[in-house]
Length: 339
Image 1 (spheres, rainbow, N blue to C red):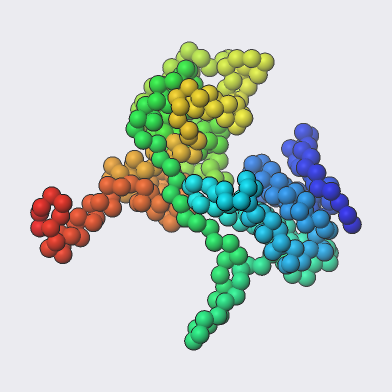
Image 2: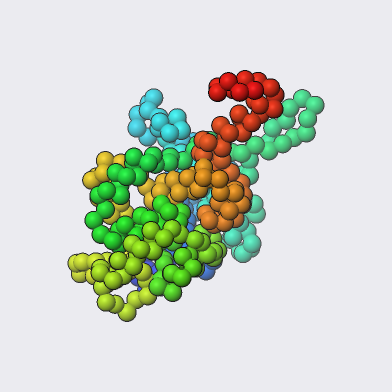
C-alpha cells in the first residue's frame, strides 16, 4: 500500500489522522493515554518519518530506519554551519531521538496487536559493540549531547519585567519565574487551583498527568489579585488566564496566544528567552539560595531526581562552595588565602 502521509486534525473529537489505517489506529491509542500536545507531536513525528521512508509500515526495515537517521542529521543550512549551543549540524540529536521513539512506539503497538504482519520492531535499541576482553554491550544509536539550559541574568529579568503591560501578563511571567510552572501548567490553571490562604497553587495536570501543590511568592498572588479585580472579563469559564480583547475576549488563553505575548516581550525588551528558560531561571535561583535538591525536585514536578541534578551545575555558588571546602580539607590555600 503506497500512501502519502497528510496530517489532518479533527475538530469533532480532537483527534488526528495521517491517512493510513494502522497508523491512525495507533494515534487513537495514543490519544487515550496522552495529552493533546503529545498526540500532535507523535503524529508529526510519524508524518516526517513516512514522508522520508515512503513505505507501508509492514515493509519498513532497519536499513530504512538508519537511512532516516542519516537524512535527519544531514546539514540543513549549508556545509560547515552548526548551532552554537551544541555544535551540531542538521536536526538536533534530541529531535531525531524523539522521532525514533514515536516510530518505535508505533511498531511496538502493531506487534502487540498482532495482525499487521510485523514480527520485530525495525527501530533498533542501539548498536552492539565488543571490546577485547569485555562482554558485548549496546551503545545508543544517537549520542545526545548534554547541554546546560540558558538561565536569564538578573538584568535580563529586569528588562523583561519592565516592559510588561498588563497584570495578566505579569502574573503569568511570575508564575514561571517565581513558581517554576511550565507553560502548559500556567495556561491550565483554574480559579479552584489558586489557594490564596496557603500561598500555593494546585497543578492538576502536570507533565505526564502528575499532580502537585507548589508554593509561589506573595508577589505573584498580589499581581494575580489585581488581574482578577481589574482586567479579567466576566465569563463562565473557570480558567484563570483569559483573552482580554478582540473577538475571543473572555475565552481561555491558548498556547499560541501566550507565544504571541512572549514574542512581544522579546521584541520590546531585547532579551531572547522562552517560557522554559523562565522556569529554569527560577529553579536555578532556588538552588543557589540553598534549597535542598529534593525540594527543588518537588517544586519542578520532576519524577526523577536525575532531572533535577542539572541545577547543581547551573547554580554556580554550590560548586564554588564545595570546591573551597575540599581545598580547606586538603590544606591547600584558597583564593582568599585561608588554609
